[in-house]
Length: 127
View 1 (cartoon, helix red, strand yellow):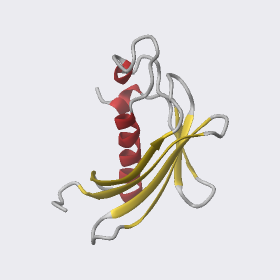
View 2: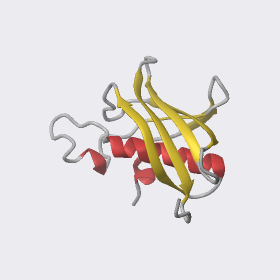
View 3: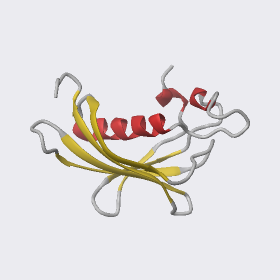
View 4: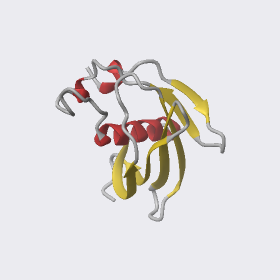
């Protein structure tokens, strides 16, 4: 079983500024909540990065790996069953064959939860 088997319905849509976007919630039964933290579960940051990579892979129709982190800010918590929207823009990276990603998670009230500037490369690449 993968994380994608455990996530509640994902709704894909185009974002306001031409970015890719998807809205989803992660159920309280998700295994990633175990130990993070008992009695007060929050979605781990590494899982948020995984969501960003997965949406970028869908957009580019190819497997990717995280090649660099320019910036990450975690501003609010993502808790079980909380609807969030991930918005993602991709553009060619500074190094040939890479993509620069700007991503942000927003909660149901419109509050920014987290934001990241990342670099992705093809999974088979050694960049």
